[in-house]
Image 1 (tube, rainbow, N blue to C red):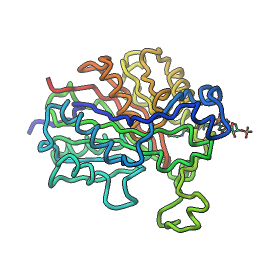
Image 2 (cartoon, rainbow, N blue to C red):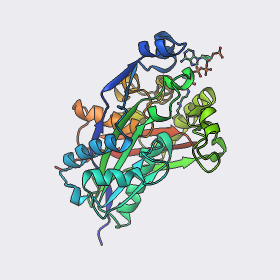
Image 3 (cartoon, protein in one colour):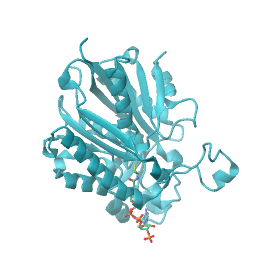
Length: 334
Ligand SMILES: CC(C)(COP(=O)(O)OP(=O)(O)OC[C@H]1O[C@@H](n2cnc3c(N)ncnc32)[C@H](O)[C@@H]1OP(=O)(O)O)[C@@H](O)C(=O)NCCC(=O)NCCS
């Protein structure tokens, strides 16, 4: 039997309308546009409407990705949804809600929790299902309504995050040139408390006390996370390039997780990347967690910068702690 590979067929994204600028934050907490831009590179972020859920945004991004793949919803045979801001804690899965909104029926659908690394983690799942022959067209989504777990009185976290969704269709191919070149994901649970939403969960079930203590909001050891992110991302990306005998200078599109411009710059510089190789969206979207990489890929696609056959180097890091990187050619249906 001919060997089957996974191909990255299409991308789509959805960005909510409402914008929170740094000037808005100056009115909400003790901060300044100058501090935020200097320390993070972020100028604004998009925030979902009150009645707009993670699955609403995900379904919009997914619809575009399916259309751009030249497929219909009947062709999708697996939905993998990366999010840490599901519509409901913890049932039903947001993947089931997205499937329902899109009219995808009787198809395996589940959520995957790997925080900011979620989208690349989900790509590893898509690849494995396709290469094993179990599935043919996998809808992979990264979507977050991070504003639903952000404490807007906490200046150390609130300025960082935004909402949005991105989606891709990964399909089976027998053409080796279209195949994922490499992908891997990893984790170190000993850093579990670097990024955490303490409640609700089995440790701190929903309670008045938990709410009074603000345990439903994201907590982050920012500085420690920053240092580990730079170290881990740099090591990870150097390894994947070395393992595949690819020089950093050959990569047309380095798409790092968009958490902080300083992290991206440090990793890019250590690889000797030119500015035109590095995809940057953190200034306009902030950190959208699992949505950040597909939203960034969608940006270069819509700007006409992502051409068929061009290699993308993905690199991400997030709560867990988790990290992942991938070398994937863009392989749209011709
Ligand atoms: C959060 C982050 C921007 C903070 O930058 P930093 O250079 O590490 O700053 P520190 O946390 O050391 O704080 C420095 C000072 O700025 C203050 N500060 C924090 N947020 C501030 C804000 N929004 N405005 C003004 N001052 C702020 C701190 O209170 C601290 O003051 P102090 O020295 O009086 O105690 C940075 O640590 C970061 O980006 N971390 C990683 C985030 C990340 O990637 N998270 C997700 C991983 S997916």
